Amino acid sequence: MTRTPAILLLFLCGLARAQTPAPAPGEDPTGGKFTLEQATEGLKGKGALTAAMEITVAGKPLGTLHCELLPDKAPVAVANFVGLARGLRPFRDPRSQAWVKRPLYDGMVFHRVVPGYIIQAGDPQCQNDPGCMGRAGTGDPGYQFPDEISDDLRMDQGGVLAMANRYPGINGSQFFITEKESPWLAGHQTIFGKCAEVELVQKISAVKRGPRDMPEEPVLIKKLTISRKAK
Image 1 (cartoon, rainbow, N blue to C red):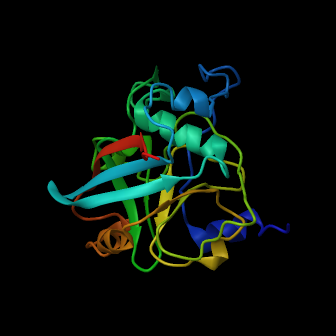
Image 2: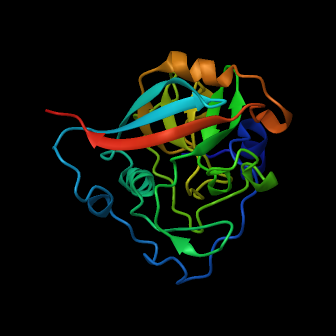
């Protein structure tokens, strides 16, 4: 598969800003290995993995996004997302620089919203900080992992859940959800889920924005809950 050169891809997508340097080898307490089995430990049921994101705007409830995850297509990305959401996957706290285990996406700001395109979140600097430490979109969890590109998954509709990265093969904790089809992203971002409430994505992307597409009033994931559908 031919890939778009990294510089051109960054210009076209703008999905994540420059991130802090990757940690030195051995810093990550997991050694870079965190499995789906570890991420789902203790979850009841055997049905499809789902993520429910309770969204608020300026402290007021807006709705809940229900996203079905795709571990059969992107097991590493799903393990990472679920592990961070449940507080099982360690990440480097951007303030203390210590490796911590806590639910990363609870209290997380959507730091970038673009009408007709995407909504983006997952920067550790934006957890419980609407200002994102003044560096929205530049943060990472202190580690990175490679792409998982499936030829049978497409950016062909709204609600596609995918990893946001700076360059091919550099994924961390940031993710985005499409508002509608975005075919130019095909083959470049890891798709690891699909969200049902596209109308809610549209509401989020339509909020009033300031510089760098950041909402003027905080749009938060108040709570992100991982569960399994009943079979």
